[in-house]
Image (cartoon, rainbow, N blue to C red; front, side, top):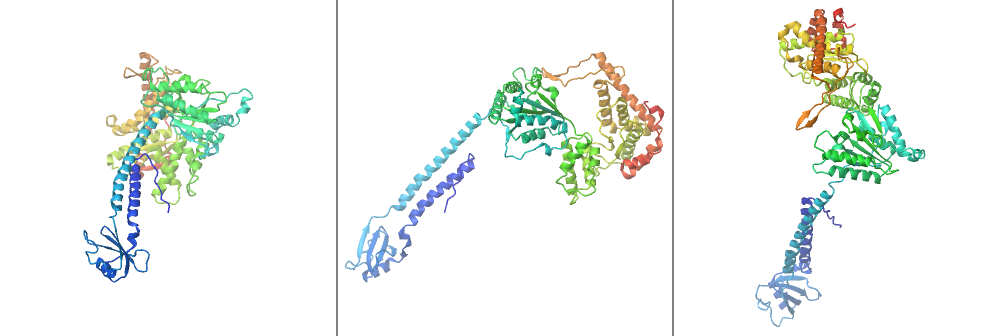
Length: 620
């Protein structure tokens, strides 16, 4: 029977278990030696019976060892019985005749038991002490290894034996995939390019909004090229100790060169690649030292190393120029938000392994989700499955899909939140004001849904959805968005008076002011400041305070404020004209909201079919 010996680990509990295991084994062996002696197999008889049989001549030999007596009967060559005599008396004193026909042998007392306990008292402490020293040595060795490995790279290697991602697994991003296919071809057929004097690109920067699939595309490049893929986050380079980041960079690039052709992927490279000289942390900032090492490693590849650095960021504007120059990151691949066709393909991928019924309309959902990233779409698909499971359904329906989309886009419904009749009425007029202005203005997106049920952090929602994807927005479209954003506050003022408006429009006002300021400062859409941009950077830290570089004078700042105020005033005036000329439609829509709480696009169109756009509210 094989004995399974536990292995030694660094954990204290494992050391204790190992020590106890060996101590028990040794003790069991010693006990076995004592109790498996041949004497333990003899029949026990009384000493009086032994004396009687010996006097009668039925016993050939008696062996006395201390107080133990073993008996060999006549006709037998080995002892078959044992007994115990009285202490400090001889067997003759207990009745054995001197002329009895039996051979009596007297042996010195056995010391086996004492020897066993003596050995146990020596061996067991030795084992325990040895185990203690072994544990201490392993602890010291572990700390030494930790100290020695502090500067080692923490990159995860996705080798050839791992589950791969390929371009076919990624829906959408066709233009980005086309750019990256050249990188794959470089890695798979380097000699084809080297024969023409072409050099492999040293770096490819993937730039895109969060959730657009930058990391997945990088893994697909490694999967297509069938090469090792070292993945690390930019923040993993930086520690509290100076020089650790640079050491990890050296170790990472050394590993990649040993496994060439290979790919290094640095996610969120802006964590260490920010522009130097900003004053953050001084000239010896650890991030700058790490960046310097990355720059040296990227520009110091040996010829034919076949190592490509892929990096991902959504803040390419903050990266150091030396990092972006040719010879380091030679290429920049823009990964944009998916268009409608791509969104439909992405949704089909995420619903591929989910049971759906015949009512599910993925094309309609793709049309609604303009501006959503791949991660957003994956979240919608997952949320739809959660909603279906919550109602104990076997398949996902289109109603589950709609509820999931609305829950993520505008927040979950709070039907249990109690509102007074007065608050409900005010909310109904507020949302009706948004809806009627957005419905009538010609360059506004159509109304998708209106509800007075609190969702997210709002008391109600009027939801507008564009009929198609838009890449550009005109001044007129911006102005219509401003007017519909102020429609709720204007409706409150018309119904209850200018001094009875509520805080319900606070988020609308912030949204409208942000759009107006963006129009003037970032898009050059002011009146006097037309075609001029006044971009402000995010600022840096100087003498423990935020410092902003404002590239315009105080007079220009005053003019910007005047332009923003004019846009807001114009938008409020247009909204007021629309609502005052369609008071009947406002009352009708608010009444319907009080009755039904939620009204969809078709019902809104039916209720507002008699409304008109006054010519005073037109911009052209």
